[in-house]
Image (cartoon, rainbow over all chains, first blue to last red; front, side, top):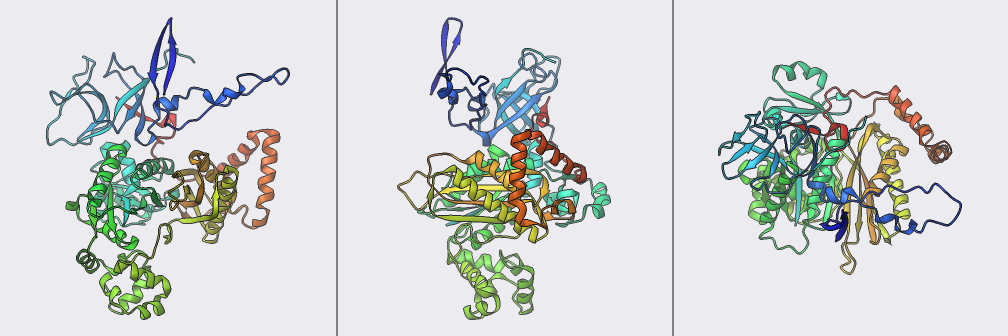
Length: 151
Length: 417
């Protein structure tokens, strides 16, 4: 299915998975007097973010970024939507543990068998050897970032 | 052919998914109220920690041996279990959720030959998507599938999958298996058999039918048939004691959610009563709904879901409430439902009087529920909340080693650097 989202004067289409679980927020009509809203029949047509991000609930994990090791691509408190069913490709960002380390976020450099921290201040790039035990929780599929900070 | 898919050391495996530093350290998970050990990593088993070890008695030993201890986190385990089941449901329409970490699959009209390859793929997919290791046993009957699973678990070189598809393999397995490890043979039965010199499963199958029926009733005879390779137990028939199930096939099919809600509520209440009878509580409710798998004309739908309850309970009201929540999650309109059920898990002994609140007057439950509903609609949910808060105050569960709810609470999601 294809939905249209308006950007300025241009239209861009985004393919959207529709096989996800859907949870809708019900719209409460505040006014009883007058005519029924002509939109009432279309309540079910709300956009669901779950459709976009949680279409495969059995292989999706949600993490939060701490620290700046992947700056500037990732900021502190970014929400990561991870997919465990994706085979990591060159250039993918992965949440990974090497030899029972804690999970860290790294960019996968398949060509050099390296896991790279993007921030030059962090020298934490790791070369993967054959004998290493590498556990990947998931490949980063999307990030959710709050732009406007509220208290 | 039947396959039993069993998650290895499931609760420990769940903790390890989110905490990879535990991958090679000994880990145990404790029961409700931090009572005793209910799940052990292989490392903890090797250190000699027995199943059911009381936590207070072993506290020092845990520290000395560097064993990591966790309180049971049913919200997490339930969610991970759901993920595994969802994947399994893609492999065959006939799935029986046997417990939080075990699932029977039935392969109708599948040729035997590639079935072990098929299950290897299944196991690999579960591991990649959920990081939960599983073992699969495949055999012509459920009891033999259980044994095949046992073998798959015991011998790592089998890569987690074992198929019993001929008599040679079947007899070899039965010669190997100790009588007390046969599925469905309880402590009393195995003691009786051992007294007669029957130590291996194979010897049990060599007894005359009449003798088995006389000594161990029809249940024992059915087990014997199962071990002989004659399938007499269909999906959902034999139930272990670690969970209680109430399931029914309907006389006809229903599409109506209201009807199913009523059924599920009734099943939940029945489970709650069974729990109280055993003086037990549960902390997990599994709800499932099936269409008629024998009707090829209709579109098929089968779903099950685990819902965790934040505290151990055996109250009709609580269990019904969470069961309904489960139904809301899996119900899809437009299908003809033929079967539904409620299974409760995470069962522990009831040792707190507060949860017997309604036990004295079981016939007043409906009145109480209606009263709560009325209060609810009149004063809003706040009133109901007050009651549960009061309960929380009088009964506080010991959960000193609880891991975060990584998959079900925003505040608990994993943080990565």
